[in-house]
Amino acid sequence: MAEHLNVRRILLDVDLSIHGPTLVAVATAIQSSAGVAACSITVTDIDTETIGTDVTIEGENMDYEGVVEAIEKTGAVVHSLDHLAAGDRIIESVPRRR
Image 1: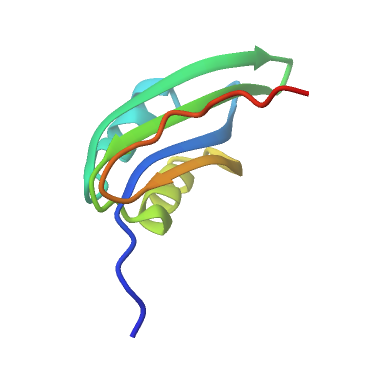
Image 2 (image 1 turned 180 degrees about the vertical axis):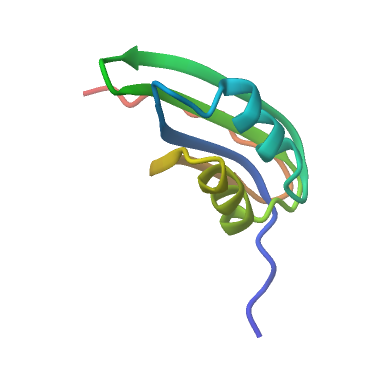
C-alpha cells in the first residue's frame, strides 16, 4: 500500500483562450478542489489566441489530478507542473549557483 502524499503547493503553467475562461472562473474552479486553501494566477504573456499564466496553489492534502481536472473543465489547458511541494512543511526553493 502506497503512503498518502500531502501535496501542499503546486505551480502550474496554464493557458487560457483569449475568449475565455476568465481568471475568476479558473480561480473559482481551483478553490472548489479538495484541500485547496488559496490560489494565485499571474498572467505571464498574451498573444492573439491565448493568455499564458502561472498558477500557484497552496493547501493541505490537495488532490493534484482533481485540481488539473477542475482547471481543464473550465476550458483552460494545463501545460506543465513546474513545482510541487509535499510533506509536513513547505521548503522554499533555493537558487543553484552555477
